[in-house]
Length: 419
Image (cartoon, rainbow, N blue to C red):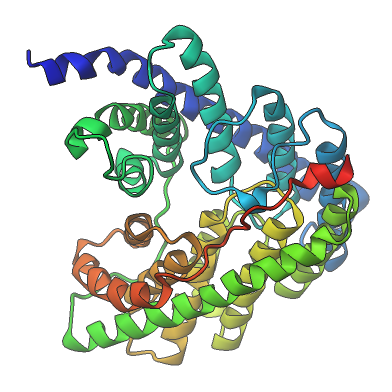
């Protein structure tokens, strides 16, 4: 066995444990949120004789969710972590004391219909736990290794495949630098964690991102032009949200108190939900499948409305202090924009339009090329689309590269304003 292999071997068992643990935490928090969602949107409305999709219930439920999350941020020790507008998908470990507040806040947000996904806070929870436990068990292991293992395990669990984790980590914690090891040596342990996390999730929950859409008939020369136009237009729309984000954040911060910020944020989300309907609520994965399954029920105007309402709801939710990620709701926006493009120009295949719109919106909002390309491809799962998507990514990337990220830099934490 070579010295390189002997160096990698001790990380296999910790990577397996971190991957499985990351998946189980994701599944547990998701299960609790789903049960609470059923209570809030099915059981309670039935008990009082109203519809859970009615305007009044949407407005009230989201306002109440904002109030409750505001109380959690204000009163729970650790204040549910830093201002989520300042955090990305993979960040340094947070103190363990803030994790109960983050978990409660993300459960209430997911169940309450907030337009954010679970990816950012659950990744933060898993990174903090892996770092705290790992440094006690193996103190000589570099801290960055525990961050990479937990991030990979969580991303693998979220997408049900280790490929997503490898692509994300190749752009972040495993980026070339002073570490002289080959990329695959640096990715070895994270891929073990990602594989363990993905398999655990697949075996227990059987997740799927694939939508019901007409099969792509194969590349044509005209498809290259269509793909580039759609991806670039979607990226431009996404950049509008990116540029608006700091202004929205500043408006909510001026309210000064987390309960007020989040209650007002919930009220605004309730108004947007009342405008866009139930399809614009929640993280968006189930809703995008419902949207494509009943595509004939939506004309071009309605599809554009759904996309813009969801994008604005995403910005408001992230700016006012709700804990959650932006990838999953952005995918819904991409699906709606792609369907809108197909509705405008029927000759553009729906699978092509949807994948290219997802690609463009994710490039703008995440600034992660590989993750955007992977997510767009996995939603439709047609290998014939891959060459076209690779071409479509180029003009969209030229548009977004060097632009501001959808993050707030050097801001005080939300809880600091309330303390």
